[in-house]
Length: 217
Ligand code: G3P
Image (tube, rainbow, N blue to C red):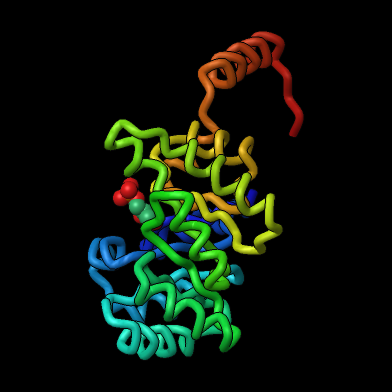
């Protein structure tokens, strides 16, 4: 499963990238606002750090305006994936941009039917939001499973990009289901390494190493 980092914070992207844990980056208007940066500038900077797909989201609602924004974003770098919302205007824009050979990430997906429409519109990525479904007492992971089943039934090539990831457990569950990508905030990716028994075991090893006076260098 590929790891995308869900942030527009350059220093956090660099840190995880140095650890070899970044296959791509996703942003959205809320993350751009949080960064306090200009969308074109910060997206260009991210594309210079990361080789993999970098998702940048349009802010228009009408198809013609979305298309104009999408084409401008796509000019930033070859690894741009234009992010459009799962509306009919977004699906129309997705079809046109993918026909032009531009990667498209269809976002704000909350149902299997929406994901089916995005695949038929030729989307490169579909972004189902797990956490926001959990927030309303639905099971967001069920949606990932349903989309995996449907896409495999018909051989759709759209990549399932699990989004709105809130915990390390969401990551392993997505991997078990067979999501192609999971995009998570930096702190969630870091938390994946945490285990109390690893800490406990390391403490015991270190204590014994000290007791035995083990020296390697
Ligand atoms: O990529 C979408 C993601 O940023 C939304 O996450 O935690 O606001 O639901 P969240």
